[in-house]
Length: 412
Image (tube, rainbow, N blue to C red; front, side, top):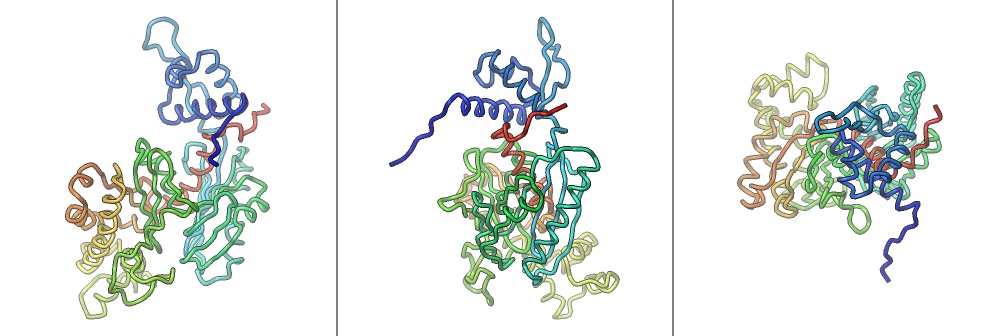
């Protein structure tokens, strides 16, 4: 039998606190009277809610609104100095860590390369060390810490904080939430990287005012964050959005890391871009790439491909165009299926997004249904390759916006 939510006065107050926080996040600065009008609550209730949020240092007063008649109204907004948050992205071959204020501005960051074939425990230990560095920096600055967000490429049980399966990391059933929470002594939230990136784009980026959009994370893998009807869509088990493992191709010569054949990510991730460019070089085509690799004593990477493309290298631009076309095919399908108002591309591949964009848009024009295509915009993430780690922070911010009582009242 379906159960319906009920609530006592405490729950009703928590809901009202959350409503005030979300309105301030989306529309600040606002006065108490404006908040009363938006929420439908009476002015005395709003004043009581605001006093509690002020006591928790989640909002602050930011001046007067003298535009109307009568006494100027005091304006309120989210307090950027409410506290700091740690974001960790466990990627394939790297770990990214940031410390931000409460509105997502980065105040400290580290990027550590790791061997993707290292033992799981070794990679996790590197992540814990970066958390320690962030904690040390925050403590030296005298700021309070509000929590840690952790993103991983793969399927996550968000209630337990467990990475269920990551094809690209080759990890299964890893209790990341408990590991990091026991180490740091702070609340830890764990989610799929694309889901987190979608939330970050909604709170802080180009999808801030969008209720229906799809976030495409493209790097070693391709994943999707489905933000539909104003919230993340997770599916029955919480694993929705594995768009990179939709079967689009029938003529691939190798299986995907998930074990299947024909996966979209196999032809649209950064490895496929590198393979296309290497194939062009192997048949003797002239390119700046060998010179750039020799000068930097480096393998073929996205930064080198970007350098070559910026210099007008025809082979780099050709490989980028082919990869953009493969991305565009999947994005056109997403537009046809979900009819979003916006599709956002982020992750490592967005570093070369300006060179992928023409082919992506050309294929969308050819393959997306005209009505869906006309209604949807395609944009690059405001955070580019940082989309996932900013999303890690956004997870904690959204949890506090939804339940401000998670943050204790200030003692001074």
